[in-house]
Structures are given as structure tokens and as C-alpha cells.
Image 1 (cartoon, helix red, strand yellow):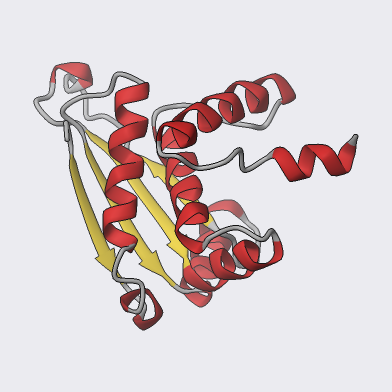
Image 2 (tube, helix red, strand yellow):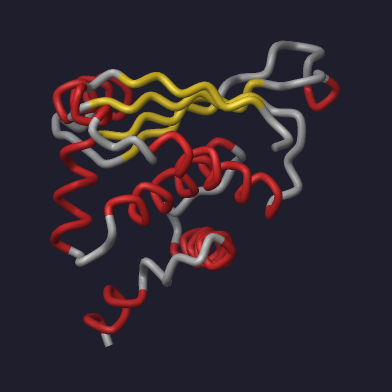
Length: 163
């Protein structure tokens, strides 16, 4: 591991997933290695739909739950890349939305958790999917990282249904 990963469990449902923390750490470590990130700090909050809905409304203006939110940290003046362990930001993941999506998409819960964690991490380091070219770049990187974790392409079924 090349960074510090702080995980806060803010929902009892997450406590019923004993491998969730290990899954998150592996996903972030693999994403960091793939993007050549070292000596960083990331915070992950595992929460529920009500809490993420509030955050989504406050920060993005959407009054609904979502699966994952990322909050990149602003670097303090003079900190830049020279800081020993720069804070990349926070990732928030909602249990109920993740579980619903995993079931609907016939994905293993922990595989979907890995995908959302990687997705959130990439947002923290500047990747986005607002424009289609950005989305293609980000999704290709997600696929490569997840393949390193032994997880199938999370976009394969969606692409087949649009063909």
C-alpha cells in the first residue's frame, strides 16, 4: 500500500459485510498503482441512502440517493505534490443503492463495491465522465483496474443492450 485509507462505517448494514473494508483497500491500492499515485490519503465513508441523499442534494443539487459521491480535496497553497501525504479527498458509498444496483445488474455485491470505489477514486484524481470522450477514458481505466482485481467488465451488459 502506498497511501493511507481511512474507512468510516456510518451504517449498521455495512457491518454485515465483513469483507467490505478489505475490498475497498484492495480497490484503492490497485487504482493508485495503475495511476502511479503514491503517498496519498483517502477517506471513505460507508453510509446509507438517507445520508447520501442529503449530501447529493447539498453538493450537487440532486434530491435523490446515489451510489457513490466523491469530494476531491483542494490543496492548500504551497502544498501541491510536494506534501508527504496529500489528502486526495473523500468517497461516500451508499449501501442500499449499491445493493439494489448489484442485484438488478446480476453483479456480486463486493465486485460492485470495488467498481464504485475505483470510480470514486478516479474522480478524486481528476477523471470525469461529463463529456463522452472523458467517459470513454475513465471507463477504459476502470476496466483495466477491475481486471487486475479479477472483476469482469462492469459496462459489458450495458454496451450489449445499447448495440
